[in-house]
Amino acid sequence: MYKQLVESNDRAVERGISRQMLDPESRYYGGTIDPYTGVAWVNHTTGTPTDMCYWGAALSNPDSIYYRDEALLNRLLLATEYVLRFQHEDGSISPGWTNYHSPPDTAFVVVGYSQLYQLLLQQQWEPLQPVLNNMRLFLERTIPTMLTGGCHTPNHRWVLCAALGFLDDIFGVEEAVQRAEQWLAEGMDITPDGEWTERSNGIYNAVSDIMLIHAARLLKRPELLEPVRLNLRMMVYLVHPTGEIVTDYSGRQDLGSIHDLSSYYLPYAILAKIDGDSIFAGMATWADSALTDPGVCSVNALVRLLLEPDLQQTSGTKNSLPENYELMLNEHFVREQYLGQMGSTGHHGRISHSRMHTDFGAPVARIREGETSVTVMTEVPPFFALRHGKIRLLAVQLASYFNPGYVPMQNMTKLPEGYHLTGEQKKGYYGPIPTELLPESAASTISPWYLLPHQSRQLTHEQTLRVGAEVLHTENGWTMHLTGNEPEDTMMQLSFVFGSEGELTCEDAIETSEGHYLWKGGTLRYTCGEDWLEITGGELGHLAATVREAKLPDKCKVVLVNFMTPFDKTLHISLSPLIALKL
Image 1 (cartoon, rainbow, N blue to C red):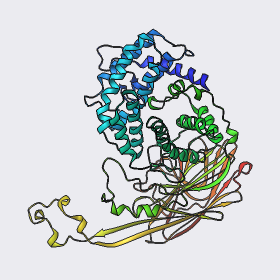
Image 2: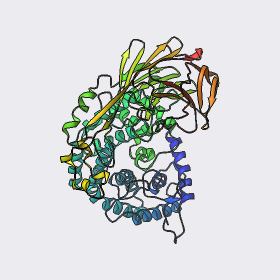
Image 3: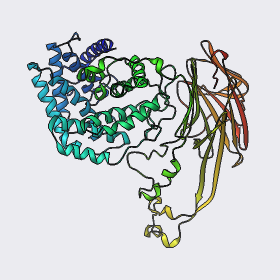
């Protein structure tokens, strides 16, 4: 593994060299151009600091073809000068996307930059001194931002703690430790089953994990490793047989997108070394096989391996990992009890520049046997997803015109042969504001709507849509039994979303202008290679090709089943018999 990582790092060095701006007249002189935007940035993903980590790791490593290469050293020096020029006066950076003068994005860079600085400092190579001086100056300038800056999201707190720990380690800033303690005093946002607030298996779980590992070491708080262990144990069950992570229910931007285990390599490898845990070692080996390069600035694996040489030998094996299981995450988490306490917090369910993540701790079921992998989930548009060999049924999701859009399931209970899910939506109307509560503007020539005290209106004619779904395992697949009664004559739409790589046939269907299929009846068959699934239960109860606010994904094959309330529908999914799911 280590050898392949060194080779991939050398390839990354070459890519970065080809993108470095060498025109002294350019405002980006010394920076590396992001191929997606054509702009050089100071961020931890597509920015110059990531290329600097590749270059610095190569310069420091006798196993690299670039070891102590003076031409590359000159490139690195130019990059440090560019980074200093683009650092704001307050010490922060702007990553190039929505955040500007961003403390958490600065913290991501600090975490990566600090590790690179520490690695280069170990080299005791005199020509590196100008680079070290520039890097130290950048880090020193970030201290005021790190001591005063806030965050947007739950995981940002742990990134800030790691950054503060590194700054204390390098500069001996006691105030940094005190600031980190303030963040840590808020407590850990993780369920007993190991799920972080953002439910982001593809991105932010791994971020929280590695940042708390750093914080535990640097702040001398070993108890911070406990939530990391919980999440790493949970993730054993949230990977499909192909190595693709389950992202169907994420609360962040990885929702429904493809991610592999590579970002989990360091957390698993480090905890496997600390705990001597064979499962963690096996997951580290699996994650290692997905590493195509050392990773972005904040989580560069090669930089960490050079700082901790003991990590260079991965001793785990995938044979230790479970391939047959059924479990329900957060089954016993008292979510309703926590949600019931929101009223006493004073924020009234509103938060600026972020979201409440009230889906935290929502139940999720995972079932796997061999090459078949099933997810049943709540609080997101899909309630069911399946992988079966090469088959990818990415989502089964219910939408309605009641409160236009998807109807997420909120509750799930275990049944002897599957799961029962329920979802509820409410929608009502609001009466006139009592005269004595009207503002002066109401009696003037112009009465803006936004000046009226809408909170004083009386709710009238509130309606409730309740839906249910029983997802039951059968001998050769799954059965879905969907129910819903009121309000009558509500248009409903069930969508099946398949990967674009397979072949889809419907016995009786109408193709829409968007390339989707309104499925009237007969058998739907989806095939990919030698694997297939078949579904029965099509219906065309209305002709709407879409439901407002229920956006269907691009680059997928979508089949739609239209029906009206009241409904009592049953659909059967049959799987190809060679690798059919058997519980």
